[in-house]
Length: 292
Image (cartoon, rainbow, N blue to C red; front, side):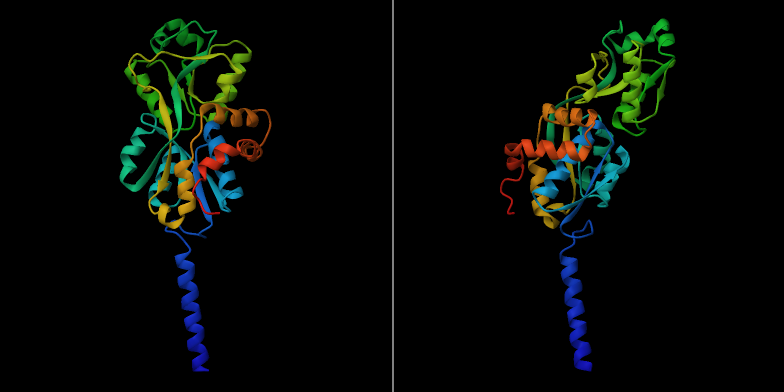
């Protein structure tokens, strides 16, 4: 009996050791991965495309964690999430990068040519953030700038813009990406004045005639990139996923096509699957060199 108990103990120890060796520092099965993202139309599109490739091409089970910008960065830094493809740099998420730079791995840009700023319908007779100081404009806008989730980089930049441009008559209204776009569409359809926190790529620029207000003080910075960020240790734990994330790169037009498909009624999963199936060449480049 003692021999059998000893043998059983050895088997248990070996099994536990094997399980530990197959689980990364982020926890869980070696073939599972957690992606953090913010519920912006652009990031819903990109994260679902990444999820589709990880699942259909690399055999992963993907858990998507929808959070605000702050927790997204914190999750990568503390290892509770494995990666995200939603870091707007160098300006929008500058404060988060400064805080967490030592605790994350920046895999570089996955998309070039982004922009953020205050956005208005083209029919509005203003062209600069400075024009918002006009008393008639303040009254027409009811002293409101429609924003998105609190803590988002563009919200922090807009709070700074209110201060730098002395726009004390305005309130930055916190909402969400979806609610902001809904308010914009409602105002646009009725040709009413409205100012929102906007960014490109975004489907709203394809469906409405909009313009950015000039930013002479440079509060919003210039053209930006969206970066892929991974937790430390991901390369060792899940090298195939890490390689794919490192090689993932697409264009604003690619992203816009997924966003438009979602806006037209497809689920994010359906839109991502369709894009992956019809863009095999790009997807093959992302997983080049990975043994499957």
